Length: 276
Image 1 (cartoon, rainbow, N blue to C red):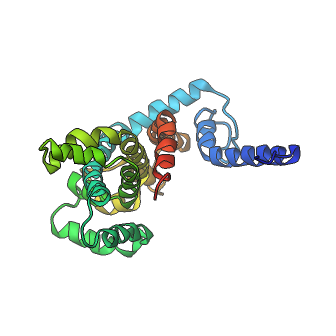
Image 2 (image 1 turned 90 degrees about the vertical axis):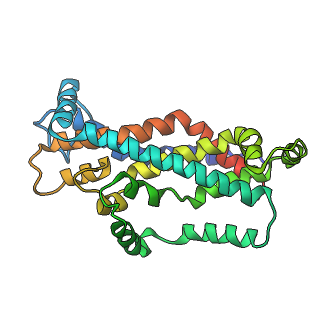
Image 3 (image 1 turned 180 degrees about the vertical axis):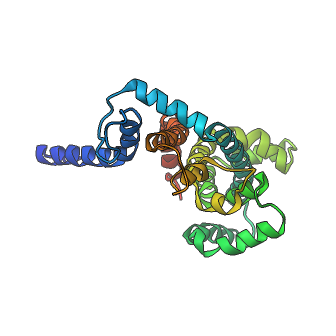
C-alpha cells in the first residue's frame, strides 16, 4: 500500500510549487508588465501592467522601428530547415541503433551520448573556421547545418524503438520489403510521439540559441536572438519600452509551441524511459 502524504507535506509541496512557478514566470511577466505600462513609470520599478493602449503602441513601434518581422521570418525558415534535417538524421540513426545488431553498435551509441557532455564553447572555434572556409558564413546553410545533429533526439527516438515489437520488422522482411521501405512504411508511422517530442524541444532550443547565430549571422541573415541582443547595445536609439516589446514578441513563438504540445513532450519523454 502507498503511504499517504501528511497534510503538512501537501502544504509544503503547494508552497514550493507556487514559489517555483513565480520564479519561472517572473521574467516573462516582467516583459508583459513593462510593455503594457505608461512611459511615466520606471522600467526597473514596473511590476504590473497599467495601460493596454501603451502596450499596443509599444508593440507597433517594435515592429516598425526594428527588423522584427523579417528577422522572425528568417528565424522560422532557419528553425524549420534545422528541424527537418534533425528529424531525418536522428530517426534514421535511431532506427539503425535500435532495430539492428552490428559490431560496435553500443559503442557508437555511447559515443553519440557522450557528445552531449561537451559544452559548445569547447568546439565552436574549429566549427566556425570550418564553416567559414566553406563559404557558409551569413547563409542559411551555415546557420542550420551545425544545429542538425542532436544526440538527445537520437536517444529519445531509440528508447521508443527499443520498446516497439521487432516482429513488425521481421514481418516486413518476410513480405519482401527492403530496408528503407520497412522504415518508411512500418516504423516511421509508429514514431509520431517521439518525433513530435524532439521537434518541439529542438524548436525551443534553436529559436533561443544565441552563441552560434552571433558568430555566423551577418547582414543577410539575422535571427531574432541576434536582433534583440543588438537592441541592448549602447548604439541603439530605440526607446526602452519598445526594446522590451521586441523581446516579448521574440519569446511568444516558443512559449506558444510549448503550451500547445506540452503533453506530447511529457508523453514522449515518459515513453522513452519505459525501457533502457
